[in-house]
Image (tube, rainbow, N blue to C red):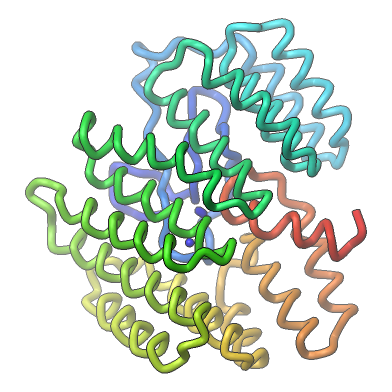
Length: 331
């Protein structure tokens, strides 16, 4: 489903595009999530001048980390006004509004960003930010035009088959977690097929795509209530992992086992497996909270929902975790 590979070309963050001094989808730790979009490298510094709003945006980020959401928004709005040509400033305003639950308002700023002159990296950030804005609202169909546009660019123009696969998987996860299982399955298939088109693809990369595909299919089957099929794909994912060619994917396996157990109603097993996952991932924490709720431990559930609200990233992990936490906490 949002979203961390050790492939040298990419950094280990989930669904984050780093542009100059400011990471526009939010710097997040390596996630306990499904294997998902890694960070796309920004163009070399010589090709991408420093963003004039970078210092102001960093100040806004610090305000948000300090729990001052309104002040952070004010800082971002001021930066966008002071530096009207700064695409990162405009995008950051939209992301902050999403984090504050003001989704429709957020999208107006992403639309403004998309109408500005864009480098390929800035276009990718704006498109993915808009897609994530719809993910925050649980709207798969509305996210499709933005992620599919970027997918087609990578696939046909850039011939970057790895990134085409990444984007397809990111969109698939948006659709999976918003309940459109057929669309999710179709986009996971596209991502798998695109990734394998990489010229001179290595055995390790093939194993990575196999692990991702089996991981995805297990989650799709789990959401459809087909435990037997889900467990079959879990076993296939384990086999791909056991080749040993992608050892840094190992943390994603207990998350998968927990996910399948959760949707099979085995909440004790789910909790045990999620505890082995990344505790700095808001989506994993959200699933832990939901598992506690299912087991009747409301106090622990609320504790975990409060932990979710401490995350200020604008990516798939938080898009599915933060709105639920906000609702549960009555915010």
